[in-house]
Amino acid sequence: MLLLGIDVGTSSIKVSVVDSQTQQCVASAQFPDTETEIKSVQPGWAEQSAEMWWEHVQQAIKRLGSTNDINLIDVGAIGIAYQMHGLVVVDKDQTVLRDSIIWCDSRAVPFGEKAFQAIGEQNSLSHLLNSPGNFTAAKLGWVKENEPAVYSSINKVMLPGDYIAMKLTGEVTTSSSALSEGVFWDFQKDGLSDDVMNHFKFDSSFIPRVNPVFSEHGHLQKEVAASLGLQQGIPVTYKAGDQPNNALSLNVLNPGEVAATAGTSGVIYGVSDQLAYDKQSRVNTFAHVNHASDEKRLGVLLCINGTGILNRWVRDNIAPDMSYKKIDEAALKVAPGSNSLYILPFGNGAERMLNNKIIGCHFHGIDLNIHTRAHIFRAAQEGIAFAFRYGLDIMRENGMNPTIIRAGRSNMFLSQLFTEAFVNATGVPVELYESDGSVGAAIGAGIGAKAFANEQEAFSKMKPLQLVEPNNQDTYNTLYQEWKKVLEMHLNK
Image 1: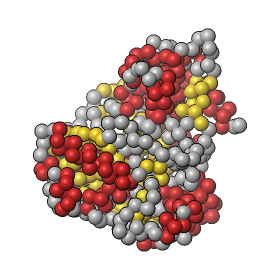
Image 2 (image 1 turned 45 degrees about the horizontal axis):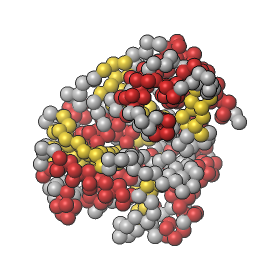
Image 3 (image 1 turned 60 degrees about the horizontal axis):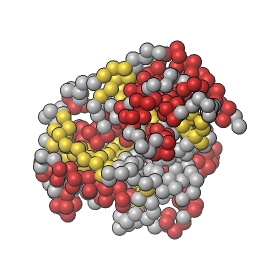
Image 4 (image 1 turned 90 degrees about the vertical axis):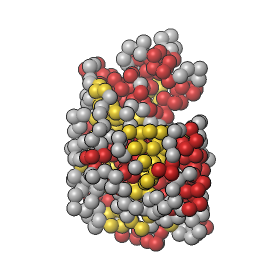
């Protein structure tokens, strides 16, 4: 069976086809060719058009079918991965009512904080495993107060992946994993949170039917199938947020296993079987893809909004004449620490691990007689690695102590400099794999469609590409402590 995976990213849509027999990716495509815009009409706001996502999904699948030696009619199931925490609202005709408020939008922070106090901090943390914070429920609360005409027309509230599945199938479903990432889910009740719904006075009919992650979420509509070259009636059998999906793609499914990614944002994601939470809600706990009431599997997620976006900003604004590869080559010629130039990468909205503060991106210690752009290249990547160390130390406080971290060889983990800075700053080896979100979504579709006997069989042929171990940990620990002093200076302003 061929399996189609769709990854609805912030920058683009990527689609892949995996052969369930070989477990290998046989074709991939991406659309558009340039990075998708994030609309920011006010500081701290971030929106994208859900209709645009759907158009780009269609274009990506059509490109997949036209540029690869495969027949899409042989695809037997579809899986979807998507950018987490976004809010999509539609009316009774399944028409989108406004642009999606996406993951890095900060406007709803006060609404989440108010809910946290009203519900009670201990009650929120013990039942929701998070504060309502800046997640989907709080974003819906913002819409209710600020856009009453939109709110009054809402029929269903969805996460981005739920919306794409709706466009494919005409059916609207969600999952406990999706609702937990929106902070709508009560883990002790194992159902929709009455506390959250009552505080915001949301209508429970807004919430779609709740299905398991690995299950049939609808079947491909006739007209959509004809347009895309797919077989009518094939099921969507998997939907998951990008970070749980990234963990799945790396076979991170059991307690103690840990995954990382470093794209626009950076994430460390560890699996636990305990209903645990950080008392300050700096890291977050969501239902993992294989979570069940009788076998708990929780994803403990550290998210840093400002990571790869800094590396991209440096390239676009300081080195537009250079590729990422050339930037890395130049940075490798500079000694660790960049002659005491430290960069804080937090320029992409409120940072959860910094207690939802917006401190911005800062360059500290530039010496106009010493520093070149190569120093900036290195300091940016090291600053991102130090941000990961800061977050991992919070996870360690909460009992997550990885001995190895799995990551796909993509985004910033393509960089030798960053990968070495990451393992030396954190002190944890990294095992690199050939994997990405769309491939993970395809494998998830296969698990949901029972193309594999079990989850273990789905990854039986997966082999690591490389193991990167710390080799300069003492130096990086000293540099990290200096970087941390700069961070604390800005946090205490």
